[in-house]
Length: 106
Image (cartoon, rainbow, N blue to C red; front, side, top):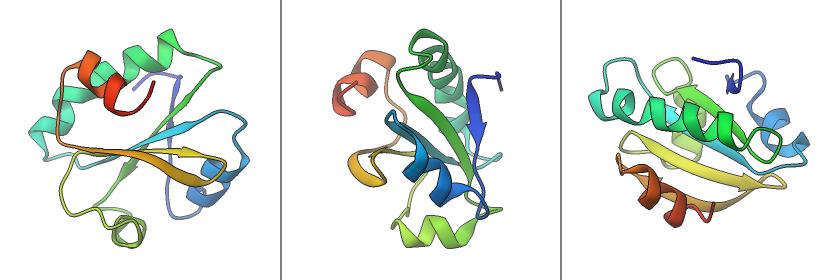
């Protein structure tokens, strides 16, 4: 993971999505999830390219099941974009970069 990607947990999740002036894209993932590993480099690339315009955050669902359940995450990877603490877009599954960006309105 790069310095441009934030790790979120039960302790800092709400603060991260609510306090950011920029949109926050949260990647709900797990270490055993192959599609999650496939999109990870794409998210790191987006974090680098759009540094200062969007925050990319990763939440491990095995370590933080309460948050995953709270947002109805049933499959991973699930990517949820938040603006001002509110969900504005969601993508489930691994997609190519261009499709991800389009579906997420980035």
